[in-house]
Image (cartoon, rainbow, N blue to C red; front, side, top):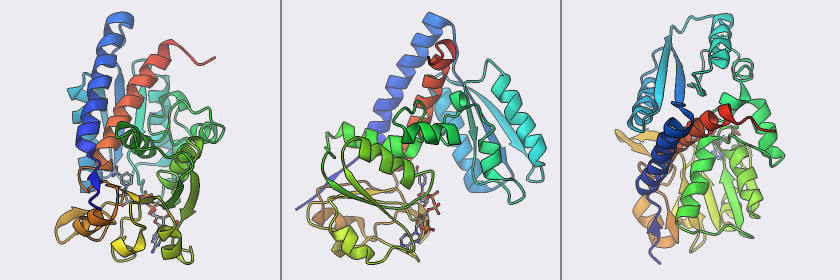
Length: 289
Ligand SMILES: NC(=O)c1ccc[n+]([C@@H]2O[C@H](COP(=O)([O-])OP(=O)(O)OC[C@H]3O[C@@H](n4cnc5c(N)ncnc54)[C@H](OP(=O)(O)O)[C@@H]3O)[C@@H](O)[C@H]2O)c1
């Protein structure tokens, strides 16, 4: 079997053109210019690159941006004050705080300060609870992007057995809920899971998001023939960006569908962030009842 490639660049372009039309319509009909505020603390080069690409992608679609770059020594109180200022600014529709935060800042407390209606990362406890209740308005971007990829290629997940190797709030937990909503049977695995290979071999859909190739790589003898493999992991390997799949070509020979790294899930995360920002802007004029 030779698997088909799930191309995140094609799908993200399609999402972005949909978002661009929505931005133009909002400007015409409601005179709203969607605005994304990003908050970057410290000078970690990877975080800085992520924020810059999010800002650039937003501008390309006509979304305006606010760029807050803060010293790594900022106090938690000052950071919370900034978030509250952005919460109360009617011209700001989406707030993105680039993670991770410095050790002296409590991530939960800061995220919990974001107005859930401006929480374009879908990470506030309110939005996480809404997701669990099946009522989410703003959902986490990476899991949302994975669902968009599956939908674009008409890959059905109803009644299939899915294994996710990740249990973070950013990826594994929200993705498990989204897959459950589509009637998949979901198992979430992690560093303390036993017999991981047996679990992987039983799955028709494998989503891997470890991002540390020394600890874990997904080899083609760990998945069943014809499985769908979604690789979220991102790490550096031999000077290049790599996923969790050990060898893309040999995995492709075994599976029915596979995402590459780079060019798979990564572009979708940004596209869904912009989608959420425009959605948040439209909510600002039509509050949820
Ligand atoms: N492409 C994108 O847009 C995008 C978006 C988000 C994240 N990512 C990437 O996805 C990866 C995960 O991100 P994250 O924020 O979720 O990181 P994280 O919180 O560190 O999650 C890593 C997960 O991998 C599990 N794990 C570690 N070693 C393992 C092993 N040997 N066997 C099985 N499971 C193991 C961990 O288990 P424990 O919970 O037991 O520690 C944890 O659940 C990173 O590479 C990140 O860069 C990519």
